[in-house]
Length: 366
Image (cartoon, rainbow, N blue to C red; front, top):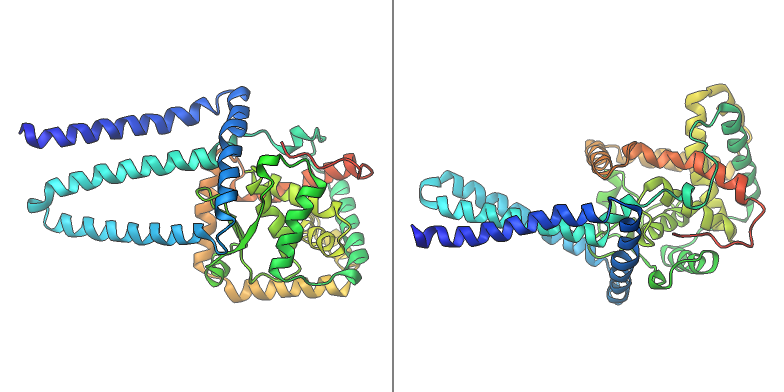
């Protein structure tokens, strides 16, 4: 019995210590503003700087390969458990050992997730850092005015819009972050990569994502060219340490509309208009219809393209993906879950009111 219990005892001690660390470390760096700031300064930035250096030499998404390996490992583990459970009498000790190892792996993965990314969910919103007016209750008059101004800008920039291929859009986006923001030097190696699972992402309803383990920003390269600049800027915002989805949208909008690049401006105005117009349509369909009639033909064609893509790739997988990500965001204290993407409407409106005529100031990235 001593020989049997000894290995379990040692493994259980290691498991207990790891679980405690996975609970205590996130608590330390989330319980106070000092802890939150320390996470950003002493953990995330150095780790992200190292990852940017290492993975910039790999032309493809190492994170996608990692996810594939994790998926295969998980399937193999499930198959192993099924085999053991069927023959539980002979393999009871193997099942216990496998369960302990699996729990240990899960705790280590969560700890790595927090160190490499998770602590950023505790950061205060950009609206606080930028001292924006509280517009959480954006009334219909302001919403209509904002939607109208976005339509005017789309009509202004549509004639100068020229589609960019993925590589060029990515290079320009990284350059604009360096030129138009006060991006911390440790995070200067921003880079977007094409996702390896493009077609699958279409069915999942995913345009891009950030890998918390490799620190890579991936975007579905099959996206229409007119949304690429905004989506790329959004994923680079995550790479710069902005976790909240509405804040990543806001930073992408602020960077993209600061440039003199008509294509980037058009893409950012178009994507923001999609959020604003959808909200206005829910509040007042007649006002939304009135503004839609003023929209230029290019933007209407682009909107029709998105609708066709949504019809083509509509699936249960997309719904499951959205439900999972909604739960993930809520677990990380994002109150509105996946609906938080839409919150960029009020923050972008407030940003326009405060910074519309302050183009000489760099966009602040806390």
